[in-house]
Amino acid sequence: MGTIRRYAKTAMAWEALSRPDTVGREAHTLLLMANGRRSEQELSLLLGSDVSELAYGLMEKGYLQKTGTLFQPEADDEVQVSA
Image (tube, rainbow, N blue to C red):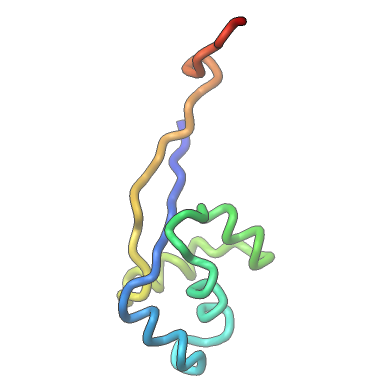
C-alpha cells in the first residue's frame, strides 16, 4: 500500500515567489506548482525530474508543508457497483 505525498506553500513560500533568486530556479518552479492538490509524483512529471529531495529540503526550510497523506486503495478494496 503506497502513500501519496502532497505539498502546499507556506507563508514563507509566498514571500519567496516574489524573489525567485532566494531559492533558485528549480525550487521556485516547484513552489509555483505546489498547490496542496498535486501529488509529489505529479509535480515530478510536471518538472521533468524527481522532486522528492527538493520538496523535502523545502519542507525542512519552511517553504512547503504536507497537506495530508492519502492511501491508495488496493484492487481488492475498491467497491464494485453493479447495475
